[in-house]
Amino acid sequence: MHVPVGQVHDYFSGLQATIVAALETLEGSAFGSDPWARPEGGGGLTRYCENGRIFERAGVLFSHVRGKTLPPSASAHRPDLAGRSWEAMGVSMVLHPRNPHVPTTHMNVRMFVAHGPNPDQDVFWFGGGLDLTPYYPVEADVRHFHQVCHDAVSPYGDDKYPRFKAWCDDYFTLKHRQETRGVGGLFFDDLNTPDFATSFALTQSVGNCFLPAYVPIVQARQDTPYGERERAFQAYRRGRYVEFNLVYDRGTLFGLQSGGRTESILLSMPPMAQWRYSWAPEPGSPESALAAYLTPRAWL
Amino acid sequence: MHVPVGQVHDYFSGLQATIVAALETLEGSAFGSDPWARPEGGGGLTRYCENGRIFERAGVLFSHVRGKTLPPSASAHRPDLAGRSWEAMGVSMVLHPRNPHVPTTHMNVRMFVAHGPNPDQDVFWFGGGLDLTPYYPVEADVRHFHQVCHDAVSPYGDDKYPRFKAWCDDYFTLKHRQETRGVGGLFFDDLNTPDFATSFALTQSVGNCFLPAYVPIVQARQDTPYGERERAFQAYRRGRYVEFNLVYDRGTLFGLQSGGRTESILLSMPPMAQWRYSWAPEPGSPESALAAYLTPRAWL
Image (cartoon, rainbow over all chains, first blue to last red; front, side, top):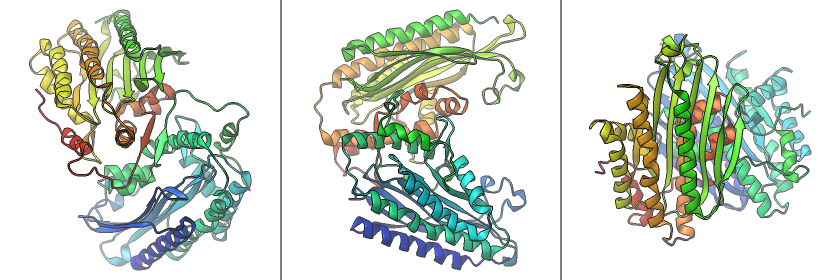
């Protein structure tokens, strides 16, 4: 089919604007804005906040890039598409709040198009998801986040939430630690059935659910008091976020290895991370409560 | 040939003890000691220091592990060895000093043996090296480090220092940043010529040169005054160390992916690291001087 690229571009671009506006309201000040172009074609707009009141580091990225030849890594399970011209577009974000009682979060929605010899032979696929990484988890917050995720995808089939939830748990696992990055959410990829309209609608539903899934948690926890102890635990756990993103995250590694824009890609890094040798929280401490959240669980 | 494994084991184990003793003298207190065993065979001894006066985080690891079947990743360019029983042993260390004027450093020496159907068909190879990662580089220190590296390997051939120096520059490159991790040193792998005795002697010479290469730099710089500004720059640059080790370092990735001991492997992580968006030092500032050191240069 002929993929209406402009329509998807406009949705992603608008989603970035909507999300940034909501985060600026929470933050009480404007995010930075850094447009960039890519020599090979396309570009993006990086919106970010550093050293903010609520967000110690936050990046909300829109990008739309084009290439002449589909790289082998993108077409491994579609060898028939190798060598085609392509374009990729999407929104990708990571928020690192300052208050350790407010979870870190990530959301991504994207579309990939391999252009056919003529426009009605374009091949597309959508992907994306969102997940939550608390330091001092509140079970009601986790249930709320998952409920919003559930409600976003369930109109597209009863199988969607269980499947995308399990996919998220599986994807965001630090195998060398035998723990998940956080409490999960949704993850999907290679979505192109039953048709373009439905795939795009589901992807929009996922993008649109981010604010209702996350903002109420910020509002509920942003005034919870904390001190050095909580900041130290947050810094230690942020080390795990670094480990996941640099060792396992396909988007990060593909971006870095394919000559992507390093500073945009690594906006997902926390502002600060710490490592300690063979450290574990005291049994019974508030910090020890996190471990039970780092293994897949049925939240709903 | 029949590889004298015990002899190499004893050298590596003794080297760890010698290095730790020298570092304890610098530090003025004892390093921690954490012996461990591996269910599949073998084990190691982790010596470490955290939150020390000189070393904010330091790990000096000895390990000697065995396996029943050579993993494909270890035998990719030696398919004839696949499936053999094997053992690997070595010393690996990373030191993260507290004072930003003292460089971070890494050293590794190792031997790998693929056992033959009978003992005189063992196949061995040695590898290793050392490198220096300054924050506020002093050119005389870099020349000293490279001179000691040069003198350690030159008795084994005039080609050795230039080849191992270039290999080090190449290996310790952050491709996504187009910069080296530091000012290099030596790196070699797959060493088994002209014979076992010579390969082992060269490896010993590399292991033994670590203290004379590094300790004088610590002694010269450990009392240089520093403040919050230098600590912030050190934390920022430590982020690059994390990026290299988690994205590129083969030893780290092989270790994490093959079920190695995570806490030992990740002792190479700095105690603390920071990331900032599109930050660069002020032109003409002391911090801006580092960039000229992060591209391969002839130091001698």
